[in-house]
Image (cartoon, rainbow, N blue to C red; front, side, top):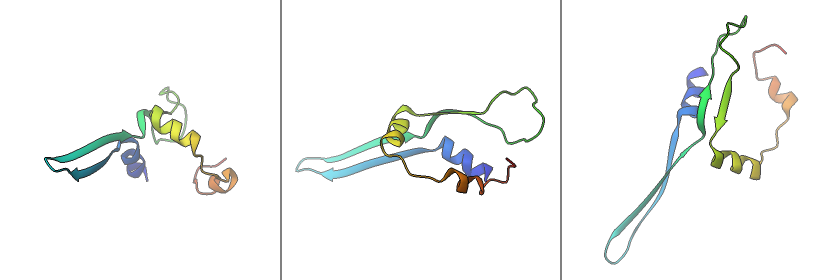
Length: 85
């Protein structure tokens, strides 16, 4: 699970199109990242002075999430976490 989380935060997705005109092949690519910065750790226990975990979302991704929210049941999603409340 930790490795999957790290892959998502570090992922760069590429979107693109290709077309051919009468005189040239045109390729357009755009790169997209979910986050611009992440500070996380996976050790549970006493505070060891490393500070608070933080994920800074890419501004474009954050704007899309805010413009098109996905409804979620927070109480139900808490059941997926092995962390005690």
